[in-house]
Image 1: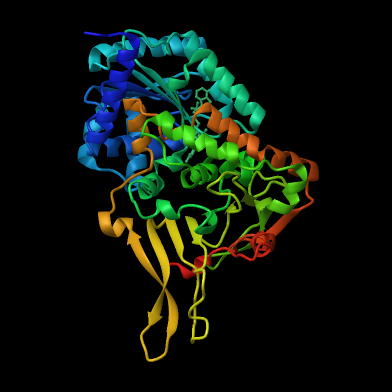
Image 2 (image 1 turned 45 degrees about the horizontal axis):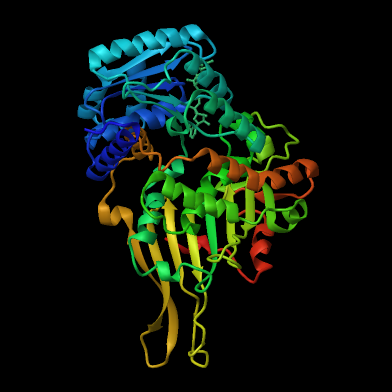
Length: 520
Ligand SMILES: NC(=O)c1ccc[n+]([C@@H]2O[C@H](COP(=O)([O-])OP(=O)(O)OC[C@H]3O[C@@H](n4cnc5c(N)ncnc54)[C@H](OP(=O)(O)O)[C@@H]3O)[C@@H](O)[C@H]2O)c1
């Protein structure tokens, strides 16, 4: 039998693909959650593990250890997680009964080598007790300033070393850096300790079904791809609108802002999925190579471009669902003179053969009229207006809308004749609604990502070059805004669709944002 390293790698890859395709339980492993007493663990990670258990995808030989500083017992940790599930109405009692005995807790400071020595002992004990086979998934669910020190300590402890067929993988939460330089530094710190194949930079947007469906929609259907280019598409719009304000995250948010928080990661990931060429295979790097090509083709902004092509706004007081809400500067822990943006809109150009002259307009913000994420593919008008001398009430170009949240689905708008003796055209839509067609299954969006990490499939995670390219694209914007301070920061009333300048960005090109109030 040939068991050279390359044949081992090939056979590992094959079994990964097979597990994923067949939906088999992942192989044995222990999962360590750093920052286990935090919000993400109880709201997303533990419910995701429970849902994976529902779908029979959790390893049969499995144990979880949560780690943070506060001294609580295993029992208290389980109770806290159970209470959180109950409060969120997420508790599935039979699944919880199965998962609960596999949850453990240890207290420790991530700056301290002693924490990692104790962790190593605990994990070795798991290997014996739960047959976790020395395979460890470390989830860094802490504030970002702990990512570097925790990884360094983890490396020193020897826990990241892969040998004798054992794997060691690390999931890193967002934000991955706050600009190009800090992202590079973090990547450097990671690479001092880990191989790129051990690093899983998470973008939870990629855990959403509808986002994953973009690849299937584009590349498993023969009819869309021939139209997916500058010849038929006029422009693309991506909206990620939140209705909530900064809630209790004012202190963090004020150091980030809408652009850093959303654009180089989530929005660019959507741009890549829409803009990429068909990959030669479903291999993780084949897909990510194509996405990187999109980032490399985005026309860099010059400092002068920023005022023309980018809009920033900050919410003022206003009304949300009929109730008055405060201005951003009145939120807790936000400086009264803050010039952090809570809204950003930008026009991107992708300079390649497929997309030349097809602008991508992106917008995201807080305290907008409603929570809604969608991608709009706006097709060109029919080349010859045959119906122009008839009683036309509406003759709009075709539009394909991929709705991501809260509704998940796809709709296609086209013109149809309104019944009656005169020729009248109206816009109609053909709708596919995920929940209606497939039913609602409780999901946090983290299930697939955790499972993929357990089976070693990094397709839906960001590679080092992707995270750095994302920052490189927005770097001139960050620099220009830093120089401008308050100048150019537009106020918008909470409950609106952002500053008027965001509408002018499209109006300048003879276009407009899709009217969101009109959709269901
Ligand atoms: N919450 C979300 O919905 C969400 C969504 C997307 C991304 N994220 C990202 O996920 C990460 C975690 O978010 P979160 O909301 O869960 O944060 P969080 O509620 O502030 O939790 C942070 C955790 O880190 C622990 N911790 C702090 N210092 C520590 C130290 N020196 N040693 C060991 N543990 C330490 C804290 O517990 P102790 O004080 O007991 O040590 C706490 O358990 C962040 O990077 C965030 O940006 C969160």
